[in-house]
Amino acid sequence: MTDSSSPPCISRADRVFMNTYTRFPVCMKKGEGCTLYDTDGKKYLDFLSGIAVCSLGHCHPAVTKAVIEQAARLVHVSNLFYTLPQTELAELLVADSFADRVFFANSGAEANEAAIKLARKATAPERFEIITLEGSFHGRTLATIAATGQPKFQQGFGPMPQGFRHAAFGDIAALEKMTGSHTAAIMVEPIQGESGVRPLTQEYLTQVRELCDQQGILLIFDEVQTGMGRTGKLFAHEHYGVTPDIMTLAKALGNGLPIGATLATEEVARAFVPGSHASTFGGNPVAAAAAVVVMQTLTAPGFLDHVLQKGKILAGMLGRIATRHPEIATGVRGMGLLQALVLTEQGIARGSDMIDALLQRGVLANFAGNAVLRFAPPLVVTEEEIGRLADTLESILSCV
Ligand code: PLP
Image 1: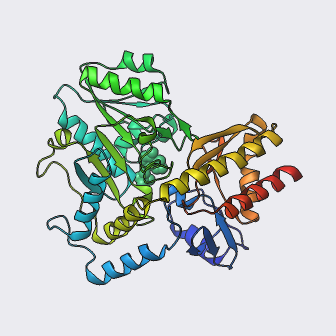
Image 2: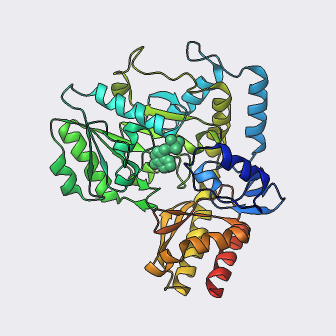
Image 3: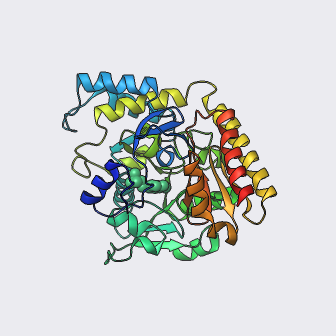
């Protein structure tokens, strides 16, 4: 809550918003690259990028230009008509992924809803169950909180939609015990983002793929957080050499414009026919025009190499901090530019103080799963900016 010293925007907001968010007491006004400015003109180095969204940096000139031009030309017509930006985006996604077909939504939760509906429709009628993993996060709609393997998100909202089960993280025997003739799909995040940047192993994902193939179960990868270059490949599953039947995207797809997507193979996508599923805004021309620029930029030669290289630098710097402060952190985990400092009990106890101290010194990061400090900067982050983060973190840890 706010006090009399809070910026006016915050005290006004707190009078009218439903109380769903725990926000930093900062009202942001402007952004450029990896830098944000609040209404008092204070500057922040952004290692959150709107929770892995503004991957090309804030107000990337080519995205801004595409949005302005498209907004001046055509904003919305619904999916009763075709539009060029949406078609071009779908072509780019199909050209650069395993998928043959795309459905556009407006968010990650909606992309997952479409994936769940598609999986149920594309498999035999007795196959209705979706198995996800403990610790997973798939969104905040009723079906996606039922899918999410963290009971705290379901509390107070029951009864939950039927047909969701949660298997132990990374345990293939536990998963095998749950599958059967009623299983429609197994849905996993290759790296669990919200529960603390927890990568699954290559061995596990390979075994999951085999299990799905043997039993006629569909494999869904939720790449809402890990997709769109975040890990140094366009999609995180490319690191594992394991291909899903359905994949969901959102977050960084529109660099901040709201858009989600459900991608699938021809064979699976065939289950959707006119009327099966729809969205009034899904693939809106302005959001799609932004996403076209995102796809073009991410797939330009050298871009993803930059992500891998900067990811190594970030992981190295965080690793050295963990070594120097073993009372605070046990190490670092993640892939590309999704990295986490894994905290000890003492580190967890001091976690919010560390986040607050970073904020005071103008650096943005957050907790994920209450056990790690998560760093997900714009993918265009420079070595100098990573160095500034590391120096700030080091100075906080050394003086407390
Ligand atoms: N899936 C994953 C893996 C996510 O990390 C998130 C959001 O954090 C979602 C789904 C939900 O996305 P949205 O908030 O856009 O509905």
